[in-house]
Image (cartoon, rainbow, N blue to C red):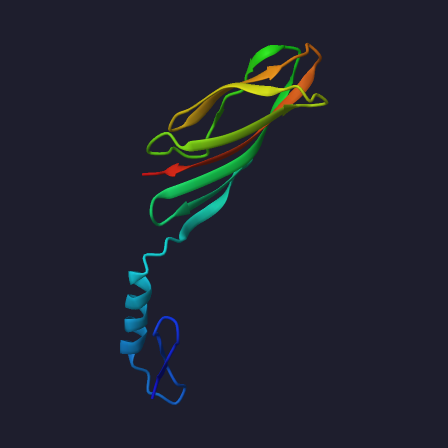
Length: 140
């Protein structure tokens, strides 16, 4: 005779039982009612890491490096996501300029496929700049 788990009331099949699919199927029905979201796809695309969930939520994160430039002031630093979101995702971005502690983001605007942003670079030295980005939203 099968016993029951304490927390979720799932049937435990005893090794001496004849295999009956009913307890297994009943366990799946119990688990499905929990509605727990889970990862359906994850991977890397270029510098981006990402996860997509059964619910349609997707998240991605990356460090994006830009070539050295002598441009100063608001330097355009846009980039594309590794996939399209169904609406503009929520993004969190930090930035920097190599060897400087006075860089900051001046403007950020995300849409379904890309982010348009500007890093303030307070020098005309030939320096690299970078962004850390995390985005989360819905995908089709």
